[in-house]
Length: 487
Ligand code: NAD
Image (tube, rainbow, N blue to C red; front, side, top):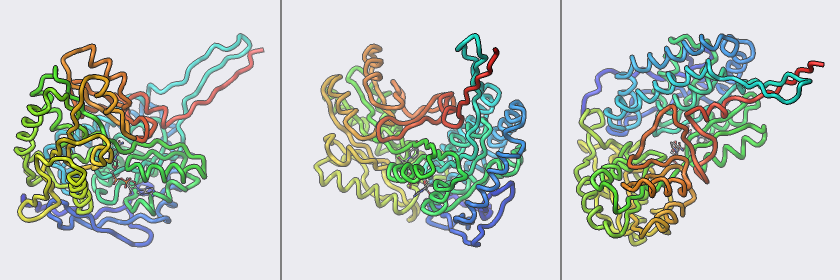
């Protein structure tokens, strides 16, 4: 395993522009899923720290410079933060890989640029957010103001820790809100580092506070807190449901980005080699710990045997390896618990009658780590649990279908609706199927493409509200209607 000689500094909370210990003095250990070794201690936020952060964020919103500053100045600071993320790309990429187990290739080539892209893109919106003048009556001058909500709590998961900081914080900050960010307890390091870089970029104290800590304590305290005006959450459907219930007590708006079981649909008239690549990256990118993973591969029956053979060949070539090696394309799952859950799902799938045609086992690297082989289960029926429940690992369920109607019916026959893929050379079919799929994102002859400028979010139980794109600015602002009597 590649040596990691530079020790990682202990992580601290960021409250009111300062790195501080938890009020309780408690810390927790974050560890490297590839080596099972501890990385460092991190301050563990509790209810008292949520109180401190909520006070700081409120003060920064109510009387601090951030919401009152010229939008062009907010833009400059957020743009600078995007630049600083890129300048610290090697460091941030390494931290992400140590904490999460994803290949350094992904951390540095995808996660760092995507996080920076969010701050660069939404910086531009700071000067573009505007109300409208709406002609209602000659007796009135009527217009709307688009205003920030106040204090936004962002609660994020462990699979894309750094990217999620960008998705959640950049638009909220651009609109003039202040933010309390709670990273997942398994992966707090890059969020803390970006919190420090934000101060270096010139964000005033209290505008971005970072509280690593357990979801059930720090997360819940944020959701319940009457001084928090909005919760934006990405994570599991179960926790999303709980947040929605808790938020009702203070009538807090929520944005929920939840799980998925996305169909990647390959028609017989597709470019099959491209589709095989797309099917493999659709599920194996990010170790399959991707909410939008193409975890159900729907293949037209006439090409099913040939397609699965090619896919299996590709899956077998994709070997788990040291995530710090730039050549590695399959890293370690985030934790032992996640690995056990994934292996349990594979076992269930086989017990339900699916055929294991690739992988399916743990494969430690140098005798350590929560690595799971690239796994393909064939002959899956859509009613099986392995086809319906999110696995969140490198496990693909292959389901044959016959014709467009069957593809659409099977594609939609699931509680989730986050994303879908369609592979065909027939343009009409591609657009028609894209319209009929119940999914927040549809990729045609592609999979797993994201950009700060393109909205992302779920249909059905994958959640509601949108991250990214102009659309997400509605999630972090509110509209005020002003009537001026002219008579
Ligand atoms: P999780 O729901 O357990 O945790 C997500 C975050 O919520 C963490 O920060 C956690 O500390 C916090 N949390 C946990 N319990 C809480 C509570 N009671 N109150 C407030 N906060 C609480 O999910 P996870 O295990 O971190 O991530 C994996 C899940 O997230 C998967 O199901 C995946 O599909 C989903 N996910 C969805 C998207 C998306 O965009 N829709 C993106 C990534 C991950």
